[in-house]
Each structure stands twice: as C-alpha cells, then as structure tokens.
Length: 153
Image (cartoon, rainbow, N blue to C red; front, top):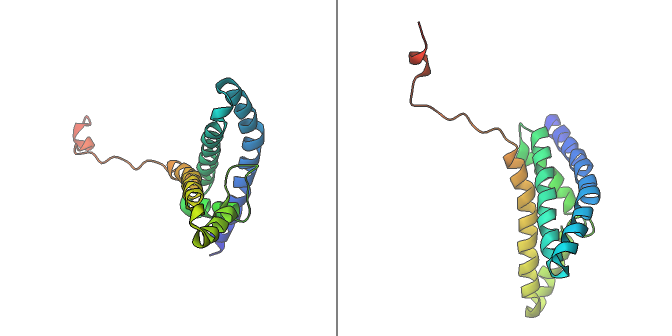
C-alpha cells in the first residue's frame, strides 16, 4: 500500500512538472505559429491536437516512471486534472462537463454542448492514458523456431 501511495505521489509530481513547461513553453508558441499560418478558423483544431500531444507525452513520462503500474500512475495524475477547469493550460474541463450534465437534464437545448464536451474530454483523457500504455515495453514475441537448435556445437 505504501508503494502505491509513493507511486501516486511521484506520478502527480512528475505529471505537473512535465505538463506545465510543455504547455507554456512548447504548446503556446507552436499554437501561435501554426494558427497564424493556417488561419483563425483552425485555431481550436490545432489547440486540440497540441493538447492531445502534450497530454500523450505527459502520460508516456508518467508511465515510464511507474513501469510496475502505469495505469495507476496515470490515473493518480488524471484525478488531479479533474479538480478544476484547466482551460487555460489544456482543454480539460471536468467541472464544466458536470455542470452541463445538470443543465442538460433540465433543458434539452444543452445536449449538443454536453455531447461535444464529453467527446472532447474523452479524447484528452484517452491521449493521457494512451501515452502511459505506449510507455510499456513490448512483450517478447514468441518464436516457433527453437533458437538453441541453430547454435553451433
């Protein structure tokens, strides 16, 4: 139990240490340059692409640190992303999604926005989890050929 708590604490710390510089020093300048070349109509698409990339790389780093249990490690960090809206950093907005659920239950006009926001949040968290899963070593491919039989005697 103590090892899991230590893994979670390290993952949270590493996640924020990785996410903040990448978002501010890498994503923001790239967003300005790319959106400037493609035009304002592509701004949201480019931002989503860069957010997914930043979260994927962060998930990969967290997964590398917590090789024994990369899903637990990335889940601990992902839980910290749900505490408040981080729209200025990355488009993770879980409190907004929960508010939309309540609004959609009262008024059907909110269903489109709820669906859009839910898909967006799923894509962002999927990038984070996908990065952690990609950090694992590939299993050894079993061979049908006995390698010992081919060695010289």
